[in-house]
Image 1 (cartoon, helix red, strand yellow):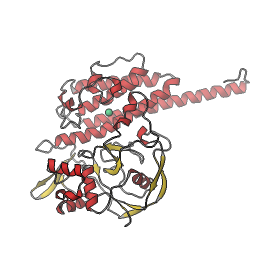
Image 2 (cartoon, protein in one colour):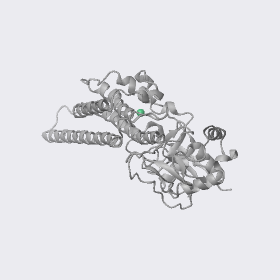
Image 3 (cartoon, helix red, strand yellow):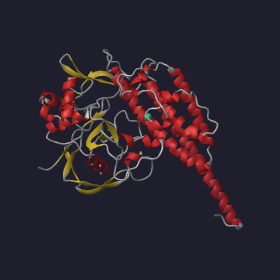
Image 4 (cartoon, protein in one colour):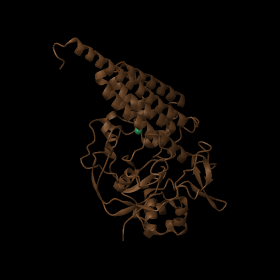
Length: 420
Ligand SMILES: [Fe+2]
């Protein structure tokens, strides 16, 4: 509580403090306005090489059209930020909440996921107008939000930006899957680089004993990265490098895809049902293996990290190699202590950890509590980040997750070994 009476010196000091606080808030609003603009521009940059036809197609129920990603990320800001916090906000189109709500039951009914590719309307141009409408409203909100409400506005804005970055990666994974259905193997971006990897350097000793994992420190994290808690690591060693295509070819030549004893039962069922014999997007041309990348069809690069494999394949490979997949605790400790190369920016790495809540985790109340918590079943955790992950989105505590059969993400393999 301010003093009832204050000396001129104190009043001058108070005025200076208020000016400093106001300046800080002004700077913070500008910084967030710029951060928002940068993330939104990156989505459009990723969509730019794609025609309107490219942006409509949905090649399987798990993948979504680019146009849908662009609209859904926009709806997220409209639904969770603008409608509750910008008093004069006008919803762009009342039907969009139904079309572009993904899985938020508390936010109302929604279009069936496998039928997103049926939406030829709204057109891409209307989605662009929707994005511009929401962008202008977010700019107004950032300029006008009352100081007492600014912290909550910025909290929601930050979730929305991190959410949009997740969809930026999905735009690329989903369009690659769509292009893989085209017999002429189109390129998303000529010159898309092959994933470079450091030369394998053997295994690093993991420090045994009790460690703490989970997000700590300043900055953003998703709720599934906490609470920070203790884990116990047994004596073990973790591969410094990623499994390469050359190693994967050895696995294939050695009968990896035709030896049931290497596979989990569900994995072997998938091998048989789908006739698997190589990683997704691999095809034999003129007696040598090629792979479809975002740069088009290219020869498989032996020293590049194997990519797009499922958990089942990663698990079978590890068994064939006489090794294991790391737990997410092993991975996080190793990354935190700089024991591994290529942790980030090449391929996500499957762990043998089921995607479960950390001890003491509770999802938040309301629709945004549906973001992560309700998916903590029947999926496996991946760690690191990939070539397709936007800059600044990854961190050591980040928990990505997909079903063990997923074969269209930028997912690869790192091994661990235990003493005999
Ligand atoms: Fe989403």
